[in-house]
Image 1 (cartoon, rainbow, N blue to C red):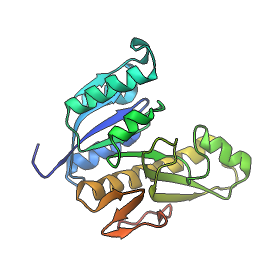
Image 2: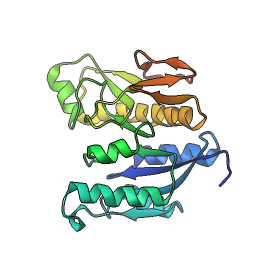
Image 3: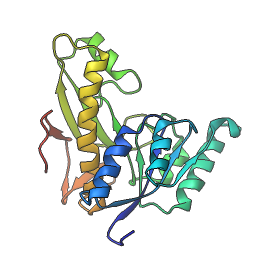
Length: 221
């Protein structure tokens, strides 16, 4: 590890496709982060297996081994802190985290959500977009707060809903945009360009009153 790389811990529950996007950019030097560990609540998570094969330290923390959510949160925080990250990255981590845990990492925990927040918080966003007849969909990167998917949004990518779209087609196009905007946003944080001040994201010294927008074609900042 070089000293100019920001130490991060990544939390996954599933395939880890955003983890792979982050790790690939880190490998090429395009993203100045050092992934200290990948943690999961599911020992069988494909993202955990991928990280191990890539030589990244991994750990699994089973929810069933703890008496309640608060106990799980404490165990998870203990393992995160053991790696001394400057940023915690949620990449498809499907556990709802309690207030004490979230407050512990206030201003240094990011999440990517597959919708144009504040629309469609929670699960099954692609299905809900289609059922609502929305003209556009997308992804949002936000700082994590105790309110589920309610933290300050930094950047969003918009994806048009096309005739003939089903959940799978729409999800694939949104995921491709997540792979662009999430590493980009992490890079802003890693280079000191992005911070959370109070309840507002500040990028390059400017308070973001509204999220930055990326169209599906995506252009670098």
